[in-house]
Image (cartoon, rainbow, N blue to C red; front, side):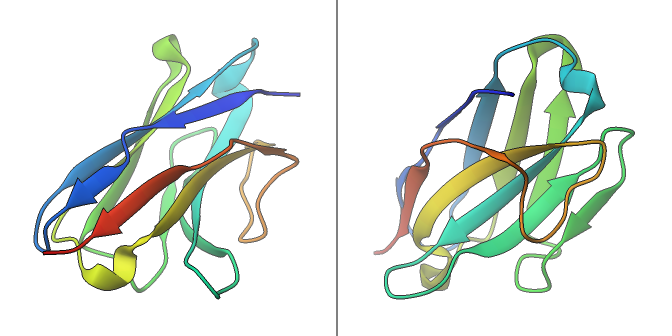
Length: 120
């Protein structure tokens, strides 16, 4: 089991940038895949991006070319760099952990979320 804590959310203007962080507790972080998900008001939670334990990354079409997922195993932290933000990116962003490979449904471990609001 991995405990996850997200940070870095906030209010940003359209076309702005934010970087989200997801700090993980426990050992063996390097063997976990990490994923970012989001849930907008009135909508279902959706997969945004993921990075597998050995490095391959995957992105939803809606964020491809604008968002970048990365990880620092020494710091046990995953990141989501969000550029060219749009109002439709407004949501509560969660990170999830799963051994080795992430799925679009997420893993058994979730953080509490960090709010991202894109508005002028």
